Image 1 (cartoon, rainbow, N blue to C red):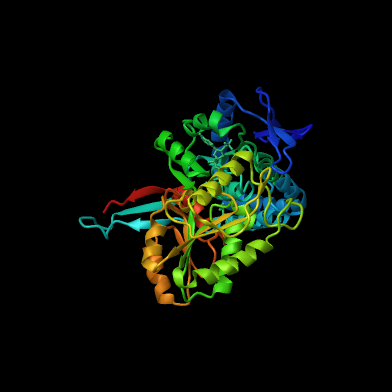
Image 2: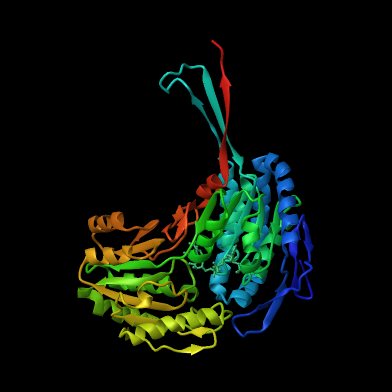
Length: 479
Ligand code: NAP
Ligand code: G3H
């Protein structure tokens, strides 16, 4: 998998190097080199995709039970190596130790659940007699078949979970996979590829492509032998891929600006706990992070006080320690967040906690009295900044929540279940959480975004169905 800290790509069951000079992966913790990855050229990408297409034929005919056995084995190997892999995550993407281990354990559960769910994949028969003008002389035998070669593109923030949540459902459905990880995060994702390889996946069924998305991305997504694109990343890149890829089915998990709507009857202690964990875990670098609070004026002072107490208790430092806030993924990301903070201060937001930066480390920031003129009210910081917007009533909260370009999730905090349902029905998002932070799991739940937050539905069964298709064979009976 690697030589002298130079990581290779998985091609046809072997780890290979590219002709181009490798890319240096710099740790966000201390800006030191953590290793190098390959920078594949178009010819190498083409060879990989062509081989994945050939390898899919036999894999698609392999009994699901056998495919499931390999996935179970992969989950076991992943768990056996969780401490080693957790150290890689800590160094490569500065994810704190607890979150790193939890990402790996959750992924093993996801792979096992997918293996079992795949065994329930079945078809149906449809008769003709129900349709006007037809007799009982036709039967359509509908089975589910693979789509072919799945291109999986994963983001930096969950290099294991958001790669496996594409790979495992694609594989159990009988597809081969070409995996393009985020450049920052690629070393972690290549480790995952090796786990599947060690589990006994036949050669060529899972292959990796590394290199900057801005350089080889367009070539891969428009390759004629890619039959499905499963992408997670920013709305900007997702929109670009959708605009150039042509008639290829896609699943897209994109950005978010999840709102927590706090009603005046909410349990404010529980609400504050949820909001803090939702907003600040992994320093806010989660698509589902709580990215704005819309609180009814009557309880705003009290909620802000409780949030302040909790923000001040967050532990800040290096991922190997038991901390909540770690350095952001890059200096560009930290610059962007700093810009949003400065904009809010300049436009008169109340800075409730101290704003401070050391390298890529942004200390957690809580703003009160944020207005809709400020960038932080609308933009996705992907960092530890939480804006509180005070509203006069729930209708204003709904209006502001829905004015966002994003539509991933929202939370409603209230004791009034009727009001919760009234609001939930009006919110333009994929999922509404009642009295809980916004979050993806459990991973068998449907997970989807609307508007700029995505296309299609993930979640174990949903992902398997998305990456397989019905195949109908019609028997015509003479009578
Ligand atoms: P990103 O910059 O959009 O990158 C995502 C992936 O796309 C990376 O693998 C990247 O490769 C690749 N890429 C870039 N340009 C490409 C192109 N032209 N063609 C094909 N691939 C290309 O996103 P990120 O910074 O890694 O992740 C953060 C974003 O993802 C946030 O907006 C977050 O909300 C979103 N996200 C959403 C979900 C969800 O489930 N809705 C989950 C996690 C993250 P390189 O790294 O080589 O550029
Ligand atoms: O970053 C996006 C992930 O899908 C969010 O998952 O809610 O479990 O952190 P999470």
